[in-house]
Length: 180
Ligand code: NI
Image (tube, rainbow, N blue to C red; front, side, top):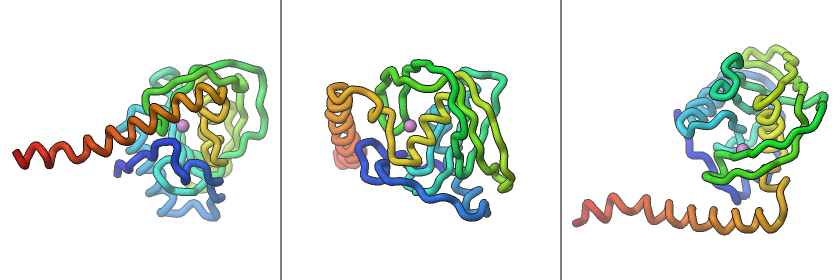
């Protein structure tokens, strides 16, 4: 089921997500909703807090940029090694229409539980490495805008405020039209 993606700034996006105790059907249902919501929004990664679930779960699908990769769901992801440096122009489904350069590690090795609850270790490169760092940040209440200058962040904050008020008035539009 496609769920609403929260727009920054939002209190839930600043909270630390809880570790998942057991990978059960409720977690697998959450993962499905996360993939549905991510694909609907044309994203390559999504963290559970972005749809209001404060659980340590992320989903990734970087095939648009890395055709050899595949969709991956990670429960309790933990970055165990970072190597090299890179700068990538990042966007975020919770900050629609914005993109800024963020300094990241070039390679990230991540330990996680898969959808069956089995422990996996994966060394990620290119966009997948960026996405893993970006999504695990979300689980600790950190957004990509927290990595950029205060000035840029405040400009984005203003544009998000406008976007939210536009959306609020846009939602009322069909009813007004019908009333005509
Ligand atoms: Ni994001």
